[in-house]
Length: 101
Length: 460
Image (tube, rainbow over all chains, first blue to last red; front, side, top):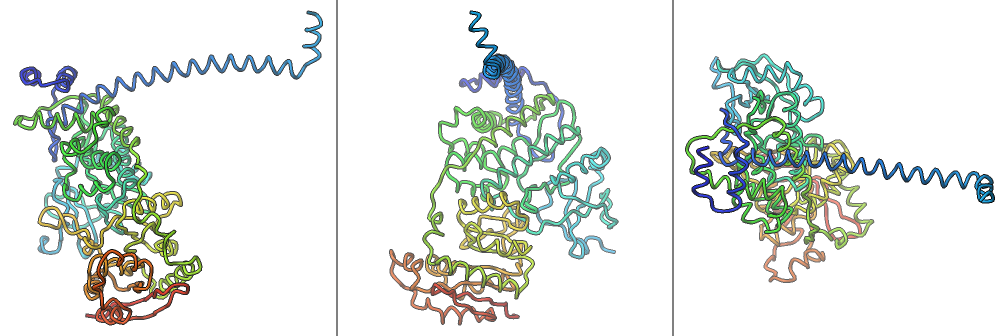
């Protein structure tokens, strides 16, 4: 929260605003490392990860929707092809049908 | 026994306190520190090391009974890499494959409840034509909610140079030579074209990342953060997708048309191949360095004979095409690398020897210097004596081609400058090289005026 307050104080633009908004989803935890992870890098990775995970959800939803669409369109296409094939393989029957009409 | 005197610690192995590389009686070992015991045992007992080694993602190792200091938990003997190469010597494709390997390993690590605690490009080497991770101690147990410590390093070591090479200029990969811990993101951000602001991956991992680094650079108190494993995996996915999307621009260089504009007829080319093959049969080298290899046509004569061949060239496009070919053919013995022989890799890093010089990684059993001497002697004004002296430091056997002034390639080099090279002739060439080498065989290449020599180094 201190960071957010500081950010609000020194907010300079859109990038800062995005950072502040998304930092809300990030919580403190103690970490140890032999290299410096970089404070900015730690904060930004949490922000990007939050966006990336939303992206993944959208991608999954999109793929499912696209899959569903493909399923129905292929079903419809198959039905049309089957009908066409039936007419081609059994022309007598279709002729009879025409005659009946 | 004085342990300190019998052990020689490697100059590159000092950053991570988890263990150190050292040699004893010429054999390379890695010590595992007692402080790393918990992580080492977990990686071993969970089968994580085994799965990485089986998939050839990590060098194999054996635990050995070698005495080390009191801080050491275990000593392991890692698999040997025939030639240590550095990220600034890799072409775009090699750096990209090394980046993808690092991310693949981090994903596997997270699945095994471990994490990479760094993401240095120096932790990757090339073995049998493929990138392989060499730092067995780079893993630690994953703590739920912890961030990826190596994220900054990954962006600086991999994403920044690859983006610069892809969006700006292929030669910018050489910035990794100056910035040993990766290209500063602020610098990368300032060089990258404006259009990259609209590419989510580059905008977030480089531009926004650089802004955040600057914003928090004055913060003295560490700000630990929590991030779920699901989000962490999404971050790795995002980096993976960013790396995969990066490709080279179609670039033209002075060398691309070399084989179409050479002095060789196809007969002469075949003849040259057969002479080199004969020289290799005579000298029987185990390690060959082809200096000025272009896209590796002659390196492949050696590598196809099962000889470990380092195929160096100054042109990153030629090295790239060499690497693509080696991947396509699944070659195991050839390693294409970028090298400017007039300014070869020197020792860099702490005390100037953290990363070894080219010479420090030698000697080669044989150096191939084909269609090279005129570039060194004329384009770079190097006297034959200096060329011979340097080559004598790099190898025991030398296959060298003399290209006379009457050759169209030399004429081209002299076309725009005054010919001050009065001693550039076959006689002077042989005289100077014979100060360091004995001429074993000399052959004329039928269909050209060039000469090929097999020389062996004289005892100094």
